[in-house]
Every structure is written in structure tokens, then in C-alpha cells.
Image 1: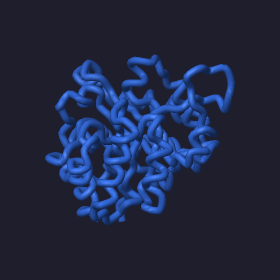
Image 2: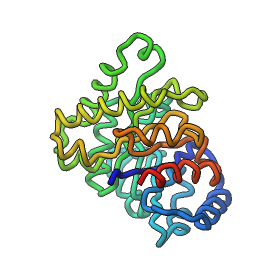
Image 3: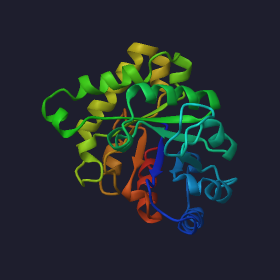
Amino acid sequence: MKKFLIAGNWKMNKSIAEANAFAEQLKGEQIAHPEQLAIIAPFTQLQSLKNAFEGTGIKVGAQNVHFEKSGAYTGEISAPMLKELGVELCVVGHSERREYFAETDSTVNLKLKALLAAGITPILCVGESLEIREAGTAMLFVSGQISEDLDGLTPEEVAQIVIAYEPIWAIGTGKTASPEQAEEMCGFIRGMVEGLFGTDTAEAMIIQYGGSMKPTNAHELLAKPDINGGLIGGASLEVGTFMEIAKAAFELQ
């Protein structure tokens, strides 16, 4: 059976009270596969969400991590700190982190290793800008990201990583890669992982699409063979739209 992970990335949104209200409403829904749902929340909400979702199977993830275990890194959070909270997932390499906070493939690589060492599943984001897409070099660019991001990892470690393809030109713009474009790149990513780390690793990997997935396009995207879920932005802020996307995945199982 095809595996899915529908993860809502709240970005810098919601108060603790709003997060708790969302969690209570979500728990009231009929959820066929709660273990396939995750909320990627700001640091301030992680403990509250862990408490709220205890025993439900719904996962909680962080949006960033530092690669060192501790030290003089004011404002940063380490993987052991996240592990202490019971956080199961953590996004690394999101395009907003790369663009606004100068995150590079070399730091992404270090963050992946830190998360894996702590027993936290990384969600590795890769994707191209509109300029790169229009120049016809999207696959070359993404292959470069993946090569650097996964450098020095074993097949067993890579099998634990979720990769989210997020075309930068489709994030928060209302534009979406066509299902064919999304599948082409996700299939390319899986093929690249197979070439570098073997068939078993590639087949086991969850590859998400992360560019303006919403209820109106979720089923068509999720039905593609190499797309195992979504990293959902704006549509994850309301339980109704988040669950519509989740149900699209559940119906395909």
C-alpha cells in the first residue's frame, strides 16, 4: 500500500490558544489514518500540541533546528531539545529558510545528520525558482541540492528522510505545478535516490509535494505514483481545508 504523509506547515502563525483550538477541532474529525497526519508548528506551540495529540497518532514537527547539540548560539534550538519535547519531525532547507536566513546545502546537510542522530525524522525541502524552471535547468538544480544535502549519509539513514519537492514559484503564490510537472520532478528525485542509495531506499521514501496543494488539486496530485503526500502551507491553517486534503489521501488507500 502506498504510504502518505500530510503535513501542515503553519509557518509563523497561530497563538498557543489558537493551536489548542485547532487540535481539539481536529481530534473531533473522523480520521482514517491519523498516523499519516502531522502539524509542523512554531516552537512556542510544540509542547501544547504534543499534549493535545497524545494517544491520537497525529505527529508534531518543528520548522527548524540547529546542527550543534548545545553552545553559544543565541536564539537557536537543538535536536536534543526537540527530542526532549517528543517532536517526531523537523523541516530543514525550506525555501524561506534558504532565501531569508541564508541557509545553504552544507548547513542543511549538518542539520539532517543532527536530526537523524537524535532520532527525529527530517523533512528535507528542495525546489527551484521560476527563473531556473523557465531556463529548463530545474532537474539539474534539484539534483545538485540533493547531492549536497545527502552527502555522507548511508542508505539506512536516507530511508528515514522525507523529501518535499517545493517549487519556489508555487509557494504562497496561488500557482501550482501541474500534476504532471510535480510527478516528473518527484519521480526524478526518487530515481536519483535510487541511483545514489539503492532501490530499497528509494521505494521506502516518502516524497511530498509542497507548492500550494489545496482541496481542489489534492486528489489529482496525490494520485500520482511518486507523490506520497503534501507539505501544506496556507491550506493547513483551517481544520476543514486540511482535512479535505487528508481525506483525498485516505481515499487513495
